[in-house]
Image (cartoon, rainbow over all chains, first blue to last red; front, side, top):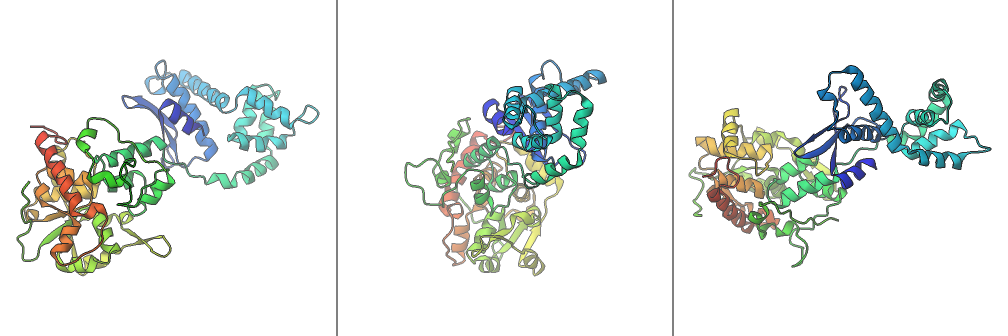
Length: 251
Length: 188
């Protein structure tokens, strides 16, 4: 997943939020680092595309970002570049070439095979077709539109993605770890932790487990084991308030 | 810290700060005995936050709602609301080191600002909330659920965060924070 990769390798927080009908993806940079906001209502393949698009804005933040520029033409151009960047990142030319070669019969790839390829690459069918045009596998925009608007292909696309459509985004791993560490350090109340992890207090252990943090039953940790909930009564929060993070006990 | 008896009323009172003590009382079937023995006050935000009040069904593992409405209706528990001014006064003291739930914040604002709750005990199983209680000067009113149950002749096996040992450790730590100014907006 692109979101996980940029979080783990580049410390970009990717956050999902229900932005209603008005929301679109956004990004920001500040003293806290870099972050990308993705609407929860987006379908999974759109989330990846939006993430890649916003990543372009983060990479070019120092030279250009839309909120500082009133030139509509420049903004349009930057958005187009961001789309091209997203397409190239999610569908690298070498990967597309390799995938098409694997599907080719007598040097030709049936258009029907493009749908499963788009699913495999986790991009929209439309995005893949435009990418093929830009990589010169299609000779004209009109041909690209024909393929995109083909009712039979659209139907296959819809059916292949039916299960994935409802795939919910997970909370960012780093966010969960930081929230849990803050609770372990006594800086966050448990009810607040539940709120941050979007679950009820009683469901918190199960939610944490789903998110990769296993809380042992109270009183069960052997001496010398990694810090767990049971250590709360004996730890030294004063020491941790200085900024030293408490190690987590992941599942 | 010398801990004083926190109540003067004929019937001792107790604030259930967060859902944790309520859940623990429900889970150990001590809720009825507890509400009969104490005048239980629940902050409005805590009571209204239905999402917090779920108990795990022992057979299925699925959550079930805990219906506090009936207890409120019958007068077994009462609801207290902090005003915006109360909450602002609390917020003015804190620097954000400790991040607590709005329900816990309301309980602490009530303790800090309202005369009618001057003698109320504060029952909670959460370190961050205990620390905040201590740094605003209400640490001597923090009580563990274990102690409150023992005071009325009830004994239950409780999780560590509900025990006297937990409360002792963290009220002591919270008192140190108060002295050193940790968590206070304007350190002395």
